[in-house]
Length: 272
Image 1 (cartoon, rainbow, N blue to C red):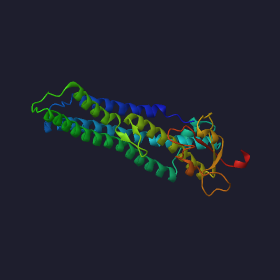
Image 2 (cartoon, rainbow, N blue to C red):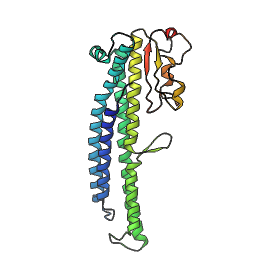
Image 3 (spheres, rainbow, N blue to C red):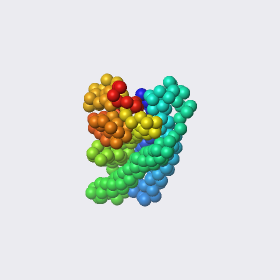
Image 4 (spheres, one colour):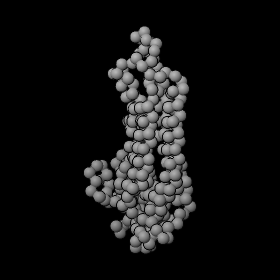
């Protein structure tokens, strides 16, 4: 079973570091200074952090998505008995036309997902800074105060909490769930790499005339347990009443986000 913990932890650390740096900038932001220059200086610092983060994440994607494809190809080569070990398989790995296209597509898709994280944080922080400054000004106006540094402690802490939440809950998915950026990145990258491995393995197997696979087993406790050891088609048009792998990827029952299951190619399901 592929293990991408090291690679995923690397990109998660990168996002954690960026979040910490952004929170530090927001902590230094003087809420009692209502000047445009003050807000713009903070936003510029945060924009620089996010730009650097985008560059680092793009580099990570360019290095690790091909790794997931190579792993999938090597696993198919071993499963089909071409060689006996992954080490040997890695020596003869070549990307067929379909897997070359897969690399390009998944790199673009993953970079878009990670870019959406930074764009969400940027948008949320900008909106919250504007909101916080407006609330601070209204707070003073309501008390008939025009000077600075007159906000009481509780109000100031409440405004600072809003700034922090702009980063810590900056991601909202299609189901309306709020995510910390680093947790979202962990889920996205871990899921992408596993699914990419499965797709690459399926592509390699199909190119070698193997159109079926067996779902791995590791004693799952969730809905995946009903799929462990089952045969699937790697090519939809293959004979037999077996579910097609392409219809299962991303389902709720198997190959869901963060799912650890993979597929081992086989040539003849009747012999399994």
